[in-house]
Image 1 (cartoon, rainbow, N blue to C red):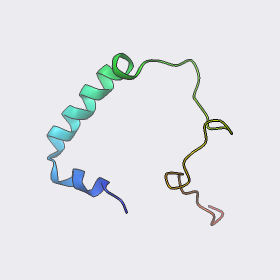
Image 2: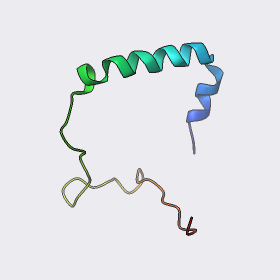
Image 3: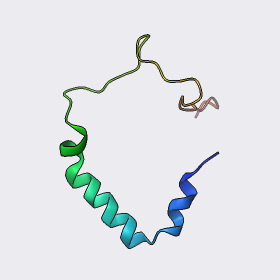
Image 4: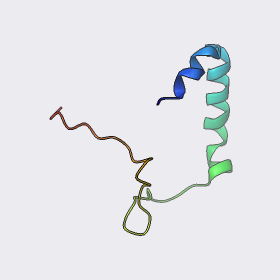
Length: 58
């Protein structure tokens, strides 16, 4: 079930301000990495949270 629909009730101006705030502070809050962390056998996606991949050849 998608929960992101709730953001449609927040006015665009406020959503944009929040996005800009996070964008300006993302490295301060979350840190910076030299490379992406990819899941492997030690760090794999939980089965319920795994992203769904399209299998229709597109």
